[in-house]
Length: 410
Image 1 (cartoon, rainbow, N blue to C red):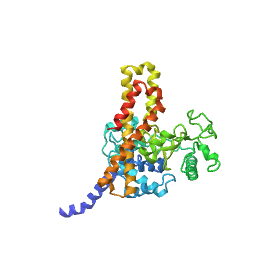
Image 2 (image 1 turned 135 degrees about the vertical axis):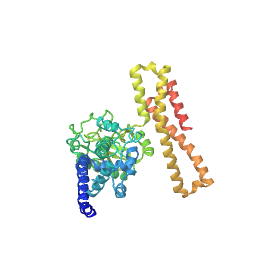
Image 3 (image 1 turned 60 degrees about the vertical axis):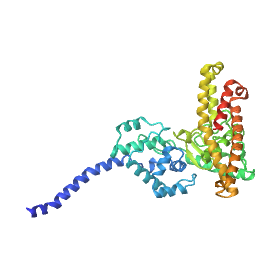
Image 4 (image 1 turned 45 degrees about the vertical axis):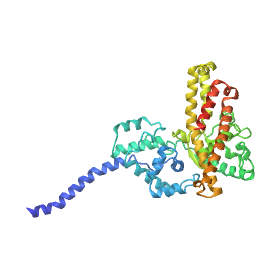
């Protein structure tokens, strides 16, 4: 009897092994269908830049989950060149690993991202493993990075990138030309991109291959069209926008776009990196600060209800609520960034650790109110530019100025 059992053991083990393989192979094959491949990475360079940035909650989380090899890629990628084959392979491997280890979804992480119907359906199923989990995570990443990663439903993965490499090269040339112009003009930026041609840039670099109008003026907004040369690109620090945009540089940092291609949704940032727009709106879409948006709100209320509405209790409450929302979002971030900048400058001039001494603390204590007052005047100037000096003298305008003063003095 024992001998019979002994002889049958290899057969039983083999049968068990085959059964396990028989169960796992179809599961693995089914899962593989939903993993990313090289073709599904529509714009790996833009994705790496967004993972470097980490302002958006989803990018911050994804970056924290990457392998050590990918962390080195994030550290070394310059943000303008095409990632090497090796860098793309590391990124692909990490993405596919993340698809399989657990749900990537968190309400706060995806708060600014509009989820597709397919993603929402899969979320209701709350998958924990297997094919359904991989499908869900693939959909979540495609919703978060629609210009970088292909969704499961895309049948032509390259359909939106016609001419994008030429456009990238144009923006690289524009960045080099801007650097050369600044070096020759006391670090000042040109008023228009056309100022770069012909000394620093060939004029053909101002035309996106996907622009059917070949840079005809008026295609962009009225005050954004380059007055001298046909230009496909939106220059964010043109004369009408320069002061406001420069105010953004300190709180928002080097990822602020200075040149945009609206055809490819491609941006050249202040620090020289190239990345695509996306659904993480605060980080990658809007290049307006609160006062531009506030001016839009005022215009909208006037258009909808008439000028008299703003003088009513309801109108003033609507305006007050809108102002509070914009100021609370923008001003503290700006003040915090400026405080850090002041701190680093003091340490650079007087030595690290100086702020831990009574002298250093006193210097900081005296410097911050002066800077806050300067910022207050700048912001007031911006409000005046956006809303008009006459409006700021009305009771509604005085309400806004008081809110600004209260917020800065907190």
